[in-house]
Image 1 (tube, rainbow, N blue to C red):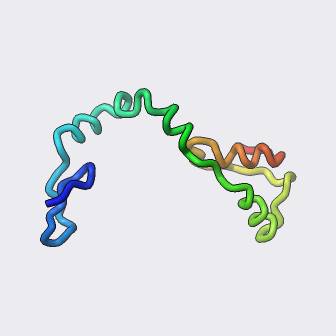
Image 2: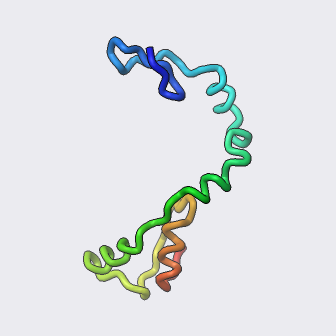
Length: 91
C-alpha cells in the first residue's frame, strides 16, 4: 500500500482505492475551514496567464480590443484581468 495524500492505494493493481483517512473526511465536511487562511498563499503563488494568449487569439480568430469577452466560470479572474488590461469589456 502507498499513500497519495488522500487515499491509500493497493500496490497489487495500483488502482484500488481503500478509503480516505478520518482527517480527510473531516476536512471534506467543512470546506469553509478547510481553506481558511490559505487564500493569500494561493493568490501569491498562482501564475497568471501568458500575454501570448492574446497573440494566439488575434492570429486564430482576429481577436482585438473591440471584442466583448464572457469569462464563464472565471474562478480567480486572472484570465479576465488579462482581457481587461487589453481593453476588452469582460462579463
